Image 1 (cartoon, rainbow, N blue to C red):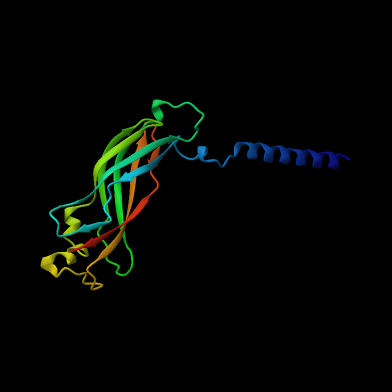
Image 2 (cartoon, rainbow, N blue to C red; image 1 turned 90 degrees about the vertical axis):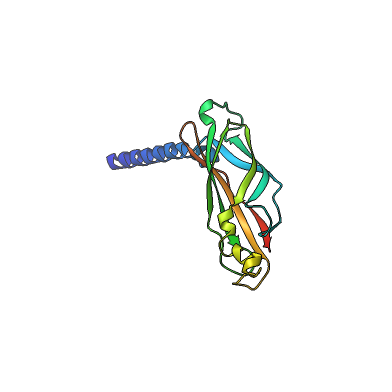
Length: 187
């Protein structure tokens, strides 16, 4: 009888431990690092075609809006949830044939977004002059023959993937989800 009572006690202890562990575990998004999410909510003025022989020394997007979204929509916000943007990154991937791509562009981008607020970026460079002066895009310059040496094409289609990074005042590292779009580069 004594061993049966001990066994029931062990089972109850294990059950209570399991219940307390389950009560403490919640896999909702609110439990991830940070109390806000950053999201690119609008992009306007991105070109679909760009001539590498134009007088423009860099490729820009007219306007981008970044929003800070509190994870707990019904909760209160504080200044500690505000975000200081630090930098952005643009990476490139060939669409179609060819494998050569420009080097990833990383630039500083200062901005401050209060929790629940937005930040607008005007004339954001997504391709710099030095990237236009190096393969594969330099292949399309008139002085270099105006065709991609790898594919013999006069069009290089690239998917540009843009992402912003920052830190909340409370110290949480944050980033927007990557946003991608395609631009065709021509002579």
